[in-house]
Image (tube, rainbow, N blue to C red; front, side, top):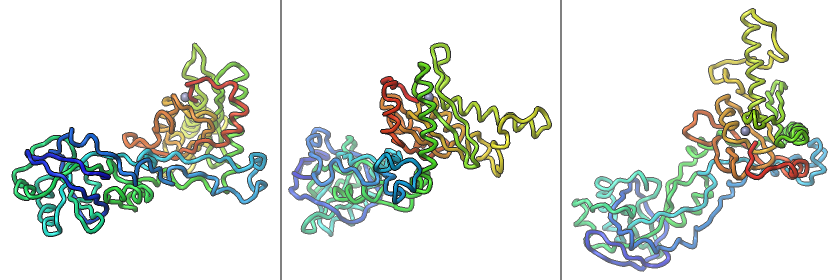
Length: 390
Ligand SMILES: [Zn+2]
């Protein structure tokens, strides 16, 4: 709200010069009658545009061991290149604005108006915003409704008639991090429930502890070796491991080809887990002999959630998985995924899509990208094909 903008409601036009920030309480919003043409030129407030919260990039370097020798083999890399957690879009997006209509009001007018709005003009769309903004000098602005045209409820006519209505731009989304809350709240007061936000992010945090870095690096290097071997055979430079904490592991190199386009490294790993699980069940049933590592699958399962193939497993893969592989990991309930090289065009875990954070799916998990990225690129860059995901 850097400069005044007119806003029309019920044929009245009025303006205000107040630049109002911060303020009081409000709970329910309304979408309605500001004219879109009067709002289109509202400039974004200089205080909040383009803010990228610190939580957007949770570098793992802060969790690294204190000296290179503490983490096997990483000393040669300089700073440990252990990547960053891929958080949901809601936690990383910068400020986006939505045009609304507000009314400048005196303290005496505010409480009655807010009460009327709560009853006659609720809005789920703007529920994350407080109804009243207190600006410099104590000036008050009351949020009325979004710009979408809608007749003003008759019950509000009398209350709005003496007030100045104007356009404003306010945060479009509810904040999910404290950084977003601080930055966006400078534009217009927003609600923030930190415990609820923390619960929403719990599936993706915290990043792996420094004590795990050596093991993560070891597994990723194994994946890089598999990828290099696959690439040397003319395949895609993708190698993958599925690792269960009990030290069992399944590994595969990419084997896709014209006649077998689905034989991606991760799919082959999941296939191996399924084969071992089948052998385990046959063994339990007194049937066929166990396979190579049947004891690795299903040991200690206590509930239905752990009946899925990859429950408790971590996946390591050189290139960001495609949507097919990512969905296989969703369905098999993988615990975490580490990958080295993002696939901007087709990657499904942070680039093109972020399936691991998708609310519509019934399993979400942690993803760490750029793990040993430079080292993997040094080995595999010559084999990478534009647009190809892992
Ligand atoms: Zn794939």
